[in-house]
Length: 164
Image: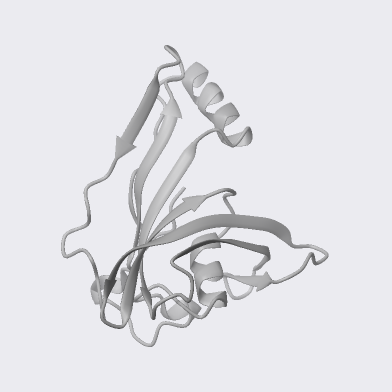
């Protein structure tokens, strides 16, 4: 699943058997999901793990991040590394450890580095067509029938990296 303003790899199964096996890989967290994001500012650390507890607000359609375990919130983890800096922006490579609602967007905003164009989570302005500078660049799975390792990649969106 991708948020509406996010581009990138989307995985479809052609049969119910394949869908079931892929779903099992997601549940077991054996699928590797890698994203690229352009964020405002430069993180203090060139790489790290973000751990927080997220709670979805149904009224606002946003996730709230808590720094400690909170009733009603679910644990969210991601690893990031700065792949490149562009003046006042950084391009991050992100590996999801969990898959929560707006996880990347909310956790990056919580660390004071919102995704470029993501006004919902603190960016100062929109990008054209309300896109945000976040895309799913790669998914690594086991083929649901043959069991072979597969790496599925998405090309960078036109105009990448987006900056404001």
